[in-house]
Amino acid sequence: MPFVGRERELRTLEQLYEAGTFQMPVIYGRRRVGKTSLINKFIEDKPAVVFTARESSARENLVALSQAITGLSQDDSLAALDAPAPVFESFDAAFEQVFRVARTRRVVFVIDEYPYLGRVIVRFRRCSKRKSMAKRAKADSASFSADRP
Ligand SMILES: Nc1ncnc2c1ncn2[C@@H]1O[C@H](COP(=O)(O)OP(=O)(O)OP(=O)(O)O)[C@@H](O)[C@H]1O
Ligand SMILES: [Mg+2]
Image (cartoon, rainbow, N blue to C red; front, side, top):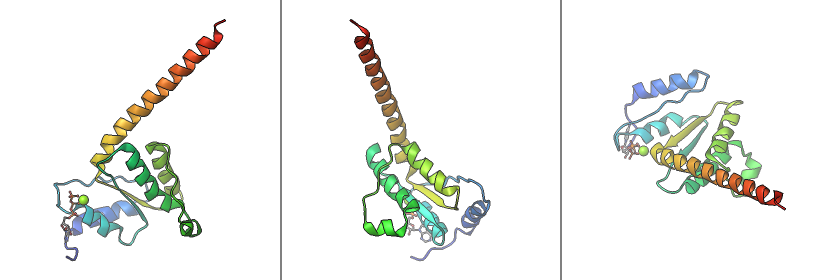
């Protein structure tokens, strides 16, 4: 079915796009109301990276996000090699890469199905914090025992 209506929403998004500064519109609404279709229509003629979060693990989301982002900075010769995309070490590092690219050119970064991502990011952060605390505790105890005669 061809895209119809949504003129007001498209106009709002265009205005934000033309603002020339960082903008983060949140599009929400009940299921099947047309959020993804609106986004797709909006980015039809624009440089965009689309990441659709999945109802799965943090790791799987990070891999998929990394794949989506890699296309941003990869030149065609690298893309032609069909090399697997590197996986960012954290969600923060992945987002930082988008911000870096966006400093030099305008780009639309879409996160669709955001609630799936929000859920795993919180768990991922807690988990990495626990891991780094455990690592530190282990390092502390190692240095403690090394200090003993
Ligand atoms: N403006 C539009 N013109 C024509 N068809 C549309 C329009 N918006 C949505 N549709 C149709 O309605 C259906 C649902 O749209 P869409 O997938 O964009 O909704 P959604 O809000 O993203 O749904 P979900 O919450 O499940 O992600 C699709 O079949 C799509 O083609
Ligand atoms: Mg959708």
